Length: 176
Length: 354
Image 1 (spheres, rainbow over the protein chains, first blue to last red):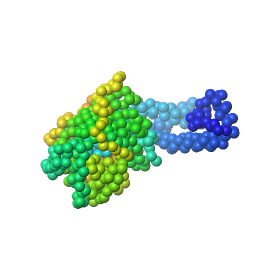
Image 2: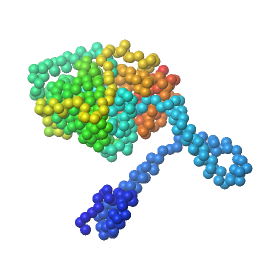
Image 3: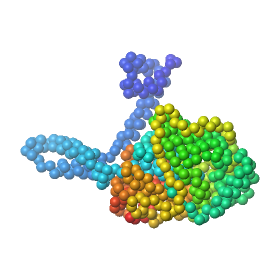
Image 4: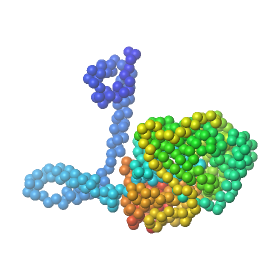
């Protein structure tokens, strides 16, 4: 067998994104082609590694919110109905309190920023600093800064200089 | 950005004047200069700073910025036409591919085909000879320039020059200067612990005056939106030139040795007056931002960390070798940014007392 499926096909196969005819053909092909099986295993391993990394980077629920949730749970006085449902109490109260707390969190900037609405973007500060630093004749020469006077925040296009820079661990072009 | 005019630039100014008039004033073409006999490489530095005004070239440059756990590379094609036209076309990473920046004197046009827009910026300080001389003077007062050897970069013979801190004796930067043209072919900056902060290096370079003028044409492609970027003020002396931000500016009581205030600027962002104080020791730079909104700095989309200092809650992010720390005190919001380690930045933050 000289023909092999390329990486894109294998990735789509893993994600169940192929049409049924192609999926069946690839499935049959894998039985007879050790090279494609090996390539599929590599792709599957990469996928597992990425998922594992994503899980490890899962956002920690803010401690303030957790405290509010538990506070809400503890403060609830059980009604007769509650007592009847006591084995299920926390299972109901916690999600409700969590929804309330999340609504409060996203609806009230004070919890996020501590005071008022978010202020100037950190990416703006980084842009401004880099703009000055690169004026030094011996300074670094990096990517283009894209912050504009209209206040448009920098985006992925600015790559190193701005917002993406703070999530560099996920950026393309990384040399591990 | 308003910058100061220090009294100590006389030496650097004399060197710069000597360099530009004797080496290049009569003939625009690059000339061969005798090898530097002594280890004092200050004349080489001055010539290197002046070189782009007299030498045209085309080359490919790679830049690496080192983060806490990773390094990040940018590859660009550089086309420079003396004295002041440069086009940088980004080749990698893919996020930047196709973007280019044309600079001509104080103006620059950043063209982003993906967004179909052109960002127009102006920085008068970039072409102000006093600002350039100021940079050299500051460098000279804080660093010894020592020629440490010779090397080849992009098939060109280079002088290797180290810039060593006069305070700590540590090497802060290494430069590779073309022996014939004095163009900086490579440079590396180091953290205080000796690790690499960033590096730029020409992979290849060709000196030529035959670069088509249209390479530097700033006319926006059809259908592109023109967007106004930053605009910086003319050079003025400090501290009287610190612009009115609507509140009393707070300056840090502690700065690492060699740092001094070199510029100040007030910009309006989201309707807020924001003061930017810019410090330098000639190589390393530091920014202190202040505004009176009392609003927390917006770290949306960033992986910010929390820390405390002197009873204050602060947040910080790393941007390659650069770190930003933001905090609030009373009704003021502060952010300090620089290629310094977190400990030094927190020391500076602690000394900012409203």
